[in-house]
Image 1 (cartoon, rainbow, N blue to C red):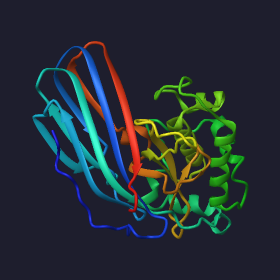
Image 2 (image 1 turned 180 degrees about the horizontal axis):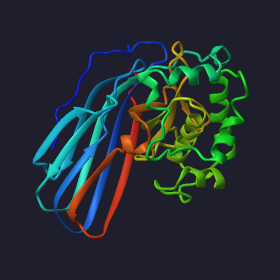
Image 3 (image 1 turned 135 degrees about the vertical axis):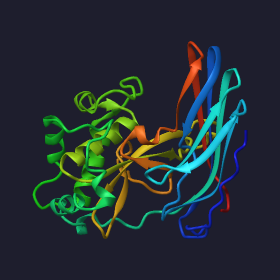
Image 4 (image 1 turned 90 degrees about the vertical axis):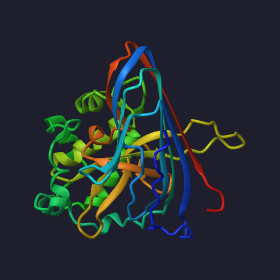
Length: 309
């Protein structure tokens, strides 16, 4: 069922120098061994606007046709769709299609950001940040190993921007991307010990390290534009759902997007869907079903730059 397209006034000028306009398609297919007689789902698949990103349109198609569909914004300001299906089915397909413009971030002068101790003290007093310092479902209270790991990047009086960038780059350098090493339930302590995982693991690890020192950090769900090898065509469905971190660097610099999986500040390759305390707040699709038996799922994501936009 095609849901109504969202259209927003442009906050990012499509002609802004360096801005990139994308068309993204995210398809999720579930196949069930037994009929599903009832299903309820929540989807975080529509992008949110922020100072560097504007959503021009967003549609969500669900097959079979849901009997109930509602749209709202969650506690963190992310657009979310609820759907209920009461038609028996053995296959469910959810297709999200969006069009966004992403502008590059301003230069981060890491050495001019405030010292981390000052940021931590201020963050505990502000409503905007206090919630992102506390433990959450996937990022529990830090143990000794995680606290010691974090402390290595934040010596006394160090600028928070420098420490956060150093932490981002170190995770990229010292941890191996290995889709077979973890599941979404793997604890941070195991990721730290084994030094292996995927983008969700590295985002949770970095968030846990920052929060261990009282520094605010948010989990960001979105897409990463990838480029094929020179001379090779782009494979359809080869782009990826991605996760990264926003670290709060004080009132002047605000929330800075950092990608520990790739060891760099986020730029126009990153399309934001939602942010929250951790993965549980922004899972792209979650729900409950009645029936179904054994089931499988296939996910394909395409992120295409629109030429001349």
